[in-house]
Image (cartoon, rainbow, N blue to C red):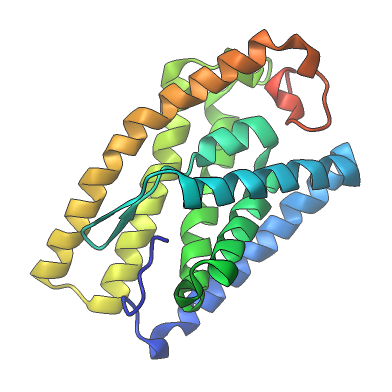
Length: 225
């Protein structure tokens, strides 16, 4: 995943436990709200879908080592728009955990850092969506500018957290800073691509009217707030 082994030494991992616990607590809050709004079945169904998609993103989509980390196409804003904040958050956490348990056990010590790096930017997307998307606008009607804003918040947040962990683990050296800059620059290609994918997915959802009102999708996808 994003935080590679040995980037942060074992004695400093305690901070990742704290940040992951905070992210986990907020995820539980979102899940409780979603359960109250749509019921247990809807939350579970969307969470299973999100987990399967996240695992597929990690294992099947291209990912290349660049600088201090790897460049991934995770599509966090897409998950948020289609499935909602709580399922997306739980799906990111579970998909990452499944990958670590069965395919990349060497990444498990970095799980706290990696899950923080994914979830906190997703929470930022959730907050930003409330500010830039009018309450009477269903997600299928989003503009490219709005999709770009959400994608930038998610991907930019990932870059910021990777930079934080790299500086925390390796210090403020010129070599480390250059490696972080290289990674961040490469990640901006994802910011360009993800909004286009978001709009393509939303256009497909808009054309598929029979999914309107489905418990398997975020209600805001087709309806106003």
